[in-house]
Image (cartoon, rainbow over all chains, first blue to last red; front, side, top):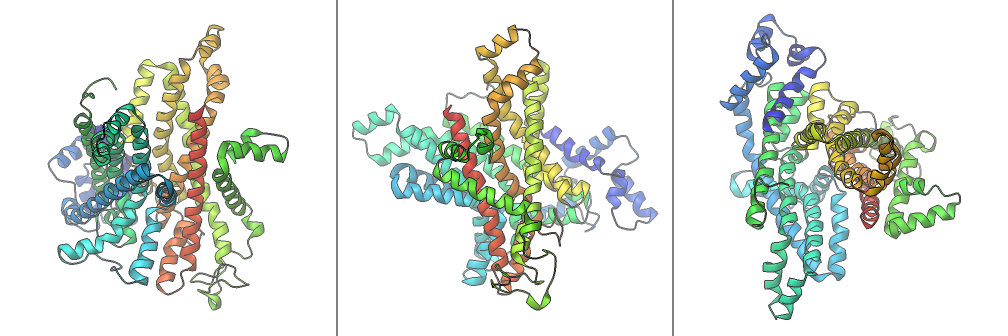
Length: 300
Length: 287
């Protein structure tokens, strides 16, 4: 899977009109030495398969090439920005799980106006793209009320988290809304089942029934959605980082695309795909923990 | 819109009651919102009060007034006109994405489910691999390769959305194939293509439509996000995503109208699409 994805990422370079060399040089005026060095760096004189394997083995050795714009190793460029993106995505993930599952559980148990509030809220937040929410948050809470800083990464651990709060909310809310809906419908389905009725009639406390019988059984769809969401969050953070001018992988990627810095584009895209695939793999492994009836390698 | 077209009833009252039963009250309201927004985008050249690109620096950053119902942006361009014309670029791209990816996805799905064996294995593998890449990444790679603009974004998103359609439709087509009526026409000696066109597609049409409507919401969000990043439609072309971006600057300078109307337009459209898609989907599973 990853091999094919990496082939796609690498091969896309060759789809550009004018071939890879004109693409890599882009609009920059290139001296013969620059062209020679690019040719050598990308092994442009070799056949495609050889080039691909050379690139792949470089990648596996931790060498992602050099940026044409920054004149720096891509690995260093990425490493210095990885932390921001990692913090942002982790923060957003925590918010998604707490808000999404919390709202879903509350609306499933309470029904009534709480249920209606959650379902209306979830439609609203599902319909709000992350960048729109980000802009609204900046204008209301940072610019208007002044509770949060507007742009930038912040200093120290607390400062960093403080600066990341609005971006994380912007990144999280749509997914949290979706998770709330999934949680609610999964729980409503479980609440009506016989073993839950039995537990109620035996006089087991509601809190314990919800935790041990309902939530545990409803956890498979919940975990699936959480997994899919986290994989997608890393890609969605591209947009949010740009809204809040955070110097993470996403702003690096967008700048690299605009400057046609292909080594950087390839590396970041490959990283996004790897994260997405790995997170999905972890989710598959989690299934067996949550539901012992599911066996790995079994027929799906 | 689709439900109305589907009903194909002769009288207006009939259409309305059909829409009400399929969509419910909320869904019908959402449908009306969609139709109004689409119409005002399509008819923008005739309805819009101003040229959307005509700058009037004397009237920049005004609030709503009689002359400019929604006010003006930083260059003094009329916001109502820009919103209406912006709907054209903002919605045309996603519509293209959905139409093409639904068509290609259905073709792949029906071929896979009908041929089975190696064909199915290859197509399913392809779907799985494309699935492993988030949709916005496709759009960004397409822009990196082909340059900024609406068409590269649309091309990238078509590749991203096709596997979603193909996966849903393949499963549905496989279920449908096992039903006896398909065997009945198969025994009559009709070809696979003819059965697909005359039996499978009409029977799966509600699902195809529901799937396409739900996907439209995601496509609008993706396309708008890419234009917000400055990688899609380029200024001065009016576009909702771009208006949110330029509106942020105006709002930081004290005039939030542009960002408010552009954001509302996006949220309202995507929300209405989601509600309609939900209701249509519920109707399908209820069958």
